[in-house]
Length: 242
Image 1 (cartoon, helix red, strand yellow):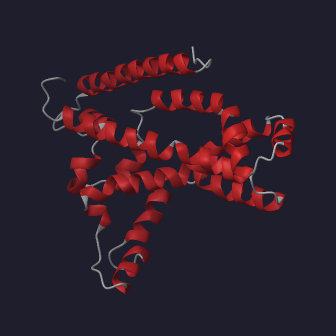
Image 2: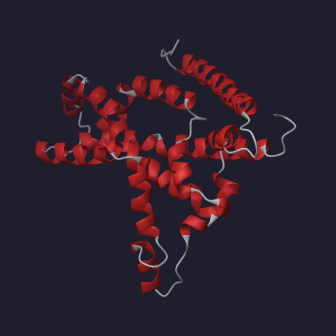
């Protein structure tokens, strides 16, 4: 593995996508849950929540197909807007620099509503008396959100963060296989897709042993990261995963 010159490339791509998932994707369900809790009209809140988690149940193939239609150079709505303002159409799916933003966009779109359910459930368990006492003290909505709601769900946030770090190298392989092509390998190829190619698409006989070894390396790295985050969580909170 350590003599393979392509390993640093796929590890780098995996780490970048995983880091973007933690930095960009992870906070969005929390923000969404906080603002959804501020909607006072019940049917609007229920409708927004239902619509937000429906994409989770749509297959990756369908989501990628929708994305292809939206960014199509000839008929996609994105390129239509670009041409309307005098720009040239962009073949987004063939540009290495656009692969990561498009992947993260799909990740957010498909998962944020479903992930928010955990935080919404945690918010529902907050004692209403805390909000009533804050109102008596003159707190506005922002004060209650940042001084009551967010601290009260911090335990759930830390647990979900530990789980997310544990899955940090588990990139959505199906989505990448559907999205990528030879022109975007430099940014799209990750450990899982490399393992898939080594195990099932190797020239001649499939190289199952090498694919298994690379996948084992991914698991060891993920295990070390989970322990690191768990120690940090133990230092700053009473929450531990194990």
